[in-house]
Image (cartoon, rainbow, N blue to C red; front, top):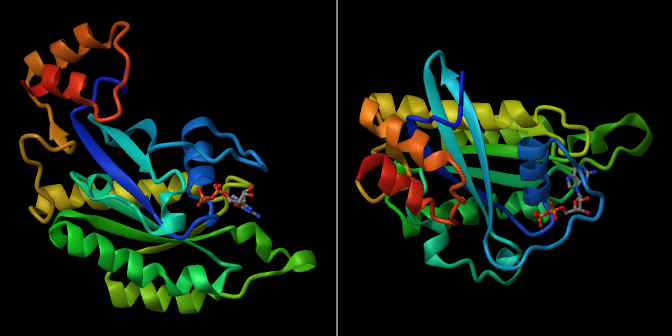
Length: 227
Ligand code: GDP
């Protein structure tokens, strides 16, 4: 099955303090790679991944990464716009990053209508739990309590080893999809969460797919798909 012929497009934002490993998670998920010294990108970084959320239902995930803006608390409103999912990341070896999770969550909820964004809490760098170099300061229990208070699932992962990375993104994608089915998440015209169900829409994608570059906001595909 050609996953690039998608029926839904979800824009997902990466949230969390600088150095918790947001870019590394995306790199692991989309390219199955890990760089010890990952370069800081300039501008908003953008990744794409396709997945089949259930048999016959194909999703194009479009990820936005803050590219270091979070360091200065200067993440712009456009970063949040049109997102249907947010991965809230903290580093299990860094208590400040855990304490700031609530601030990141509040910031999104202030800037977008809350029911439109589905979240998952991710405790990152779980490889630091190994007996010989245990640096963990946030226990699984503590993180699970926070996730449950905020009404979202909790997953632990490591971009370094690859452990649970795919599962984390699967949980979030599945949550968005379930939100769509239940009506909690809405897809509106002009959003990046675009539904494309008609055979004409899929044909348009087929035509458009040949040699068409991805744009940062996915407009070319979106227009072809739903216009
Ligand atoms: P960002 O600023 O949140 O995008 O974080 P980066 O992806 O740039 O990662 C920050 C640092 O954490 C880098 O030095 C990475 O090599 C390191 N890092 C990223 N993921 C992991 C992981 O799973 N385990 C460990 N131990 N280090 C990681």
